[in-house]
Image 1 (cartoon, rainbow, N blue to C red):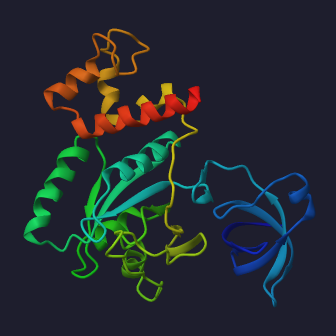
Image 2 (cartoon, rainbow, N blue to C red):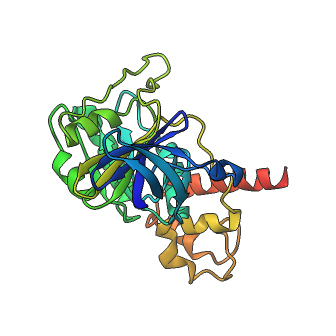
Length: 294
């Protein structure tokens, strides 16, 4: 019996990374009986190993540190949220949704702004992004695969981690992975000029080794992304720039909406907290409350 990590799963077969290579494993029937679905990123025990054929049997899924539902992957250390400055245009609302989901899971968040090969009209957007997210404490990396800008700093953030690249299709995630690890030759897609949405170029979730103990999850693009499972009263803790001021609110249960004496709203009014981030918070809270009532 050996322990390894699932790096890919296709049609009921799980590809497990062991000390002497990659093994194709079929899960025991007991896993289906117990309704246990192995996920990419899972640590598992395997048996019946055939070193020549590189096959084996998946016996058990070990306890998870965390689990993402979209994409389905386990034991993630950090999320690299990728948006592009252009083609498609950046959606800060979508980025904040992914941030909220990552914060709810306790994951480290790094913001990667791709296609940053500067043109004059891009400068104002770059400054806007810095103004919104630097005070919140999120690391910002501006990248361009055309100019090989920001690739080394991005590569350094991946060392010793299991990282998920998240973001809408067409922002250049596969191109970034190709730049981080030359030779991958992942397929890249084009963006529709009509709807500003990229074609999905990744068909399944897979962990890619990019350095010693450094894995990246190349995942399918995001479609409908929601935050339904977050409790409304917990949403405030997913906006980290609120945290230093919450203890100064008049009410300990303050949700930073219409309550009097709210220190968070005062910081929004003074410009310390981004108005746009706060507006997104209010929109998310409204959605969660409506779904809870409905």
